[in-house]
Amino acid sequence: MTRKITYVRAINEALHQILESDPKALLIGQGVTSPWYVGASTLGLIQKFGPERVIDTPVSENCTMGAAVGAALAGMHPIFVFPRMDFMYYALDQLANHAANWHYMFGRQLGVPLVVWTIINRGGEQAAQHSQALQALFAHIPGLKVVMPGTAYDAKGLLHASHQDGNPVIYIDERWLYQNEDDVPEEPYTVPIGKGVVREKGSDVTLAANSYMALKAIEAAKALAQDGISVEVIDLRSIKPLDETMLLKSIKKTGRLVIADGGWKSFGVSAELAALAAEEAFNHLKAPVLRIALPDTPAPASRTLEKTYYPDANRIASEIKAWLHKEPK
Image (cartoon, rainbow, N blue to C red; front, side, top):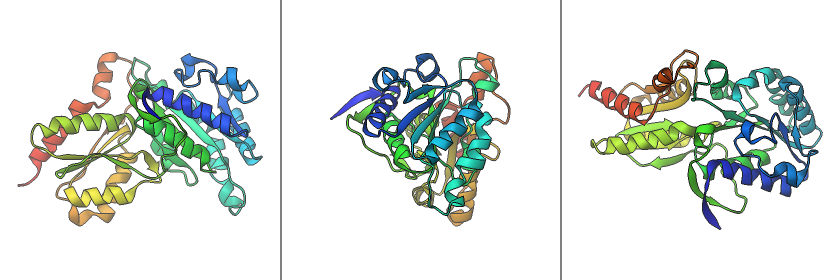
């Protein structure tokens, strides 16, 4: 049965189903029993599964991440949550030096069935240490997969797929999406890791985006359609592995690529996609690639500055129009 539910409820439903169907599954992390920490995404889990499977940890990210990696190596299937993505820096040693490498170093004889679920919190004057989107950092590390669902349907399906993968997956959600609703099946299902989706079909411009920015891209595409500009919106869903086939097919059709990413511009997801277009579709490009991302500065604490710092649908649409206007006729 399919019904319309919120993004946060879709995550909660997936967690209930995973813990119920897999006795080796654990949920570990700071504040997993507190709606304030994780935005109601874990409601009811501690009551249903108890503190041995829903483990609220001390504030020691490196230590507890190491415990989760060890549990995965020992045959458990942990989901480790970081209520704020910024604090994943503390666990980078465990992720980059250990979790990401063991499957390779053991000659593929042993996997690390670990989901690292991390939440981007920003806006609301949370400033530089509570607003970071680090998807590019983790996508750079061999051995880690990175997914970023932008809809409630994908939030549930990608969480199930991440749990079933058998090696480390960085599952990134965005608090700005939590109240968005979507049609979501009640039963468990998976969304394939490494597969994007065309959200809007178009012929003039390919607009690739992820997570919250994918929704803003759709809004921008609808606004641009009123001016006669046909935009094809691709929701990447998976940052690594990337759906190169879908992206390149669209670029070759439209001849133009715009990337909207919620991370910093330099050395980020937008740079990787631009490089892919240059390497694999250069002869099809009618214009230079346009990248819309965060400026290379820390997030501001001022609400007024936040409005300038974070791109929205209006900025995406206006930048695309200005970019097309500059294009040689």
